[in-house]
Length: 496
Image 1 (cartoon, rainbow, N blue to C red):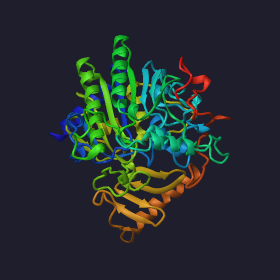
Image 2: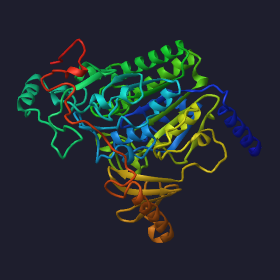
Image 3: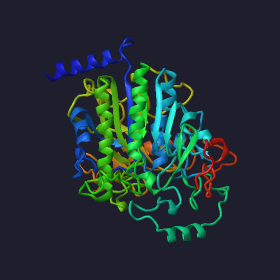
């Protein structure tokens, strides 16, 4: 019986990739700072019926890896390359950064757009806020959203405090008066302004259309959802396959769930916002069903990094938090949904990563990859459909910024600093160091780490690292006085 099922899966896989098979649409949903155990399908008490249904109708990815923080994770997702290869920065990008993802990188959108897909990025970008780095320069037909995190703005605008805890007018005036004058980023700090940060800019395509204050954060989930469904309807009307990258600013601090969801969860504002994200996913999936696109659309749901436990996030049994290469900082919940193609109610513990999204989508779209650059991702489709095969990925490198901190091979993970070895199959919480019992495995994983010296380098910039995009004189999209820079200004020249 198992042999017959395996044969059927392999035949279905072959038919899907046949030259005359319809190419699927793609919806990639990326949540900001969503912990490993924040949705029902991964053990949360938050009520997430849409995501639970998505898991019941699709496949859970229980060993899916991102990066410890936002910008590197998104670089890996877009390019199919280790973050250090495509975006070699020590941490994340801040507003007014002189560097960003190089426009010559081949993103998922570049690859699919060249194959005839309509492409849209909706939500958080965080790969550079200068016009040269925005989504329309990276293969997307349409962009609507914030170019960075929702906390990267002035405190007086509510970016450093949760809903209901914004500074009062007197505090805001004091903060504004006390803020030092805007200065150019120091020569040794090309990754942008930390303080004072310019106002958050809402962008449509390459035009600043608004300044995001506290009240404007509340409807972001709804606005992103409406833009996504509108783009799907438009692409369907034009009979074009589509790729939509829906990257919510939720559930990153500060937390701004809308009134409908406020107080609805057992886990405070964070749980409320998780439940609103679930609503958004449900709206998108319902729209696909209503338009009879569910059987021709592959939806992938992930988080960009582990949850920040110091802000109340839940990573379940995983040790660690956002910002680290412990499993709690880099392993994220993943759901793959495509009715009739991805088997329902299934799960895989095979290693899957952000790096693998580009080659997987490209294979399904029959879109060629550039031959002039190395990518680190692999095609995951055999794993997603449950075809009996050797997992396409057995190894994974855990970078934090430019430093290689850990290596995984099969179930084994080696933390390089202290030579701590963990078996993630039996010890997902990295509680028991078994290096002394398995010196041969320590030696093998150390050799994998050492082999990276000739490519990415174990620390610093190795020969396989590609160049950052760079501008000579970065300028904020909206200055501290509310003035919009001329090359991205629409009819409204300022948002004081």
